[in-house]
Amino acid sequence: MPSLYIHVPFCVKKCDYCAFYSQALINSSEDLIGVYLEGLEIEMAKRRKDAPQGVSSLFIGGGTPTALQDRDLAHLMAMIQRNFHWNPEVEYTIEGNPGTITPAKLTILRSYGINRFSLGVQAFDDKLLSAVGRRHTARQAREAIGHLRTAGFNNLNLDLMFGLPAQDLSRWQASLEEALAYAPEHLSLYGLMLEEGTPLYKRYTAETREKTLNQLPDDDLQAEMQEWAVQRLKEEGYTHYETSNFARPGYECRHNLGYWRGEDYLGFGPGGVSCLNRVRWKIIEDVRVYRSRLQSGQDLADEAGQEPLALQECMAERMILGLRLEEGVNLTAFKNDFGVDLRDIYRDVLERYKAQDVFKIKGDFLCLNPRYSFVANSILQEFV
Ligand code: SF4
Image (cartoon, rainbow, N blue to C red; front, side, top):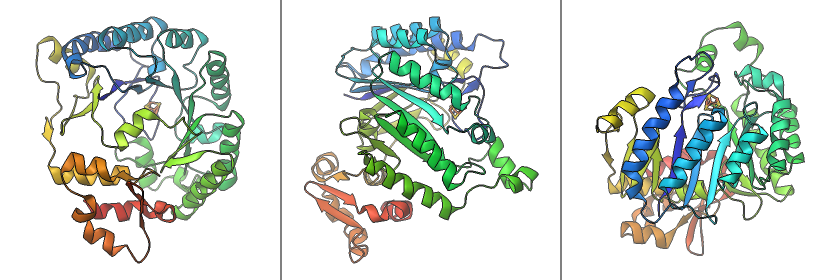
């Protein structure tokens, strides 16, 4: 069974670092959400046959799904439930941001069976939040966590970011300590990336006053932030099950695990990416074009079209994603899926790093020695 991802491409306002496809609602007078929901109805009716037995997990992401008003959120949930076999055992996640979460919305989500919530906190620090154009405040994040717990969400992820402008180690520690005080079941910790085309990228690649005043933490400081977090979360009993993700045992994100393990996934909505039977494609990132193509029966894929993946490419991707996991890459699954033993096909790479003890075989898995997780990217490129 594939997993299902629904992209909700709306945010109240764009954050300064964001390169995801999402439209700001703040200055829009048009009913773009209505256009989106109309398109999604047609898309689901057409493509639900891709998951005849149901889905292994659901993730409603964005964007900010909780930017939708109550009526639209209920419409979206009813649509998913109507089109895909619903099983309470399955992990159903929705993402949301502080400032857009109300008890009424959470009641709707719970009533449809959403059992996991991923909250974009990023920092419990108003200055850091405003330095990257986040719209919400630390107080709103605290309120949102309170609402979520009251509504009965007992599988809660908090997203935090390090490497923010003017963030030093102590400010990073303060945000993470506050997050720990709420005992989340899961934490995702991501370093800020300067993505080309974003306002933050422009600001930090030009000689601006802000760049001088609010410097970005350098690589050494970012590594120190990450190392401190890994150690601190280990002390608190979280497993570091993926490079950027930590969970209480049993609360690892099943949806993302499927993705890192190379399982098939279906992406719906503008910007949604699917990978099924080694063919990957992305839906065009434009809400109006999305709906009109659906109405006229045209292909939804973006300009790259449907891309059949070469075997070599799939194997490299399996290695790169799988080695981000603490468990590593499953040897039997690799052989079943690609017809070769990864120890044969990647013998050269494995031999090259043997003396440094970079890779380990543990039972039926090949994994990365955790000592190398901070330099993993350069090593993993060897599989490409
Ligand atoms: S809330 Fe998330 S998706 Fe929306 S603009 Fe900010 S980073 Fe991008």
